[in-house]
Length: 344
Ligand code: SAM
Ligand code: SF4
Ligand code: SF4
Image 1 (cartoon, rainbow, N blue to C red):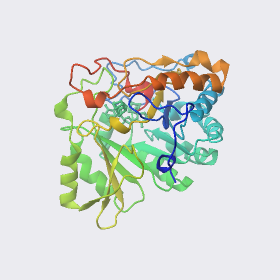
Image 2: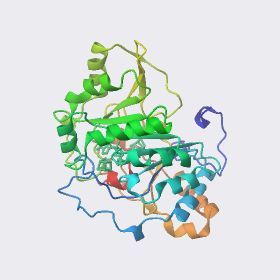
Image 3: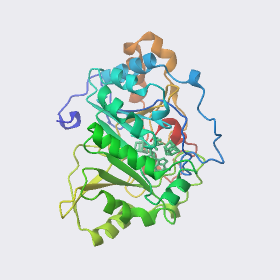
Image 4: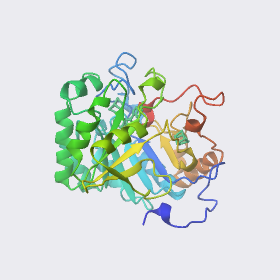
């Protein structure tokens, strides 16, 4: 049973924030470099080719392990490794093996663009990785290449998905960020491709993250619109959430061909149950995807996991973020951390 379904009393060691939300999940970036330049995240004309390649600015594996142990003491049971592109981090499977041993972490996942997955899937599985999410915004090779900033090939991502299946990752999540007039024509093709497989395709509303993607509301395709389109072609049936705070709203294909999800941060914000913290590769804590600044945790790591947990617990207790509910209002922050620094 997921820890979120279990009744729990919050102890001082497992703090709630000012809106009563516990800390349950950590999204940890292991690198802020990427081999893609997706326009909605890291556009090539704004982010230099060599961005993020300074290894000294990254936490070491020892520091990361101490950090994760500290977060686990605060009630974090779910850990997602992300980037930039996490598979660019050298020797990632050995870090996964260390994090898989941390007491309390019962769900260890990775988000990747999939381009390098074919060569790493087996080692990641052997190291104890439990789940993989692959980003996949288009099946059309020309469109895919353009969306990746001219750097990615959809065939490599599909090879990565096949390699993950072969390595024993039974059901993958496949994330598609939909932009109107850009890749909204790919929705049915993606659905057709993954219906009847164990994989869960998730359509994500294009978000106003970071500062460099020139986000426009007109580019957002509301999930309700996509649901109506897909339902007209292949009827859908709503499913219950698996746990409180689940980000994607789940639906099953009524003909039994599997499951899809919708992540609707723009049309239906889910701040009320947001139990996620993010830490960048250089060890800064962000309590919201849209935070302006992070708190530097790296200096505390030399003091060990208990000191780290005490400090983070205090920061979490002061948290009152709910940007997506405030979007467009004067109270909403204008400056946001870049998505490629905290990984989604
Ligand atoms: N490089 C990896 C990848 O692309 O999967 C991991 C990091 S990436 C920042 C994590 C996720 O954020 C990806 O699924 C990506 O599609 C999503 N993302 C990036 N910018 C976004 C935006 N503006 N709106 C919605 N999702 C976004
Ligand atoms: Fe790289 Fe992922 Fe951002 Fe695309 S979404 S630029 S793959 S970090
Ligand atoms: Fe959580 Fe911030 Fe997103 Fe709201 S806007 S769901 S608080 S990360």
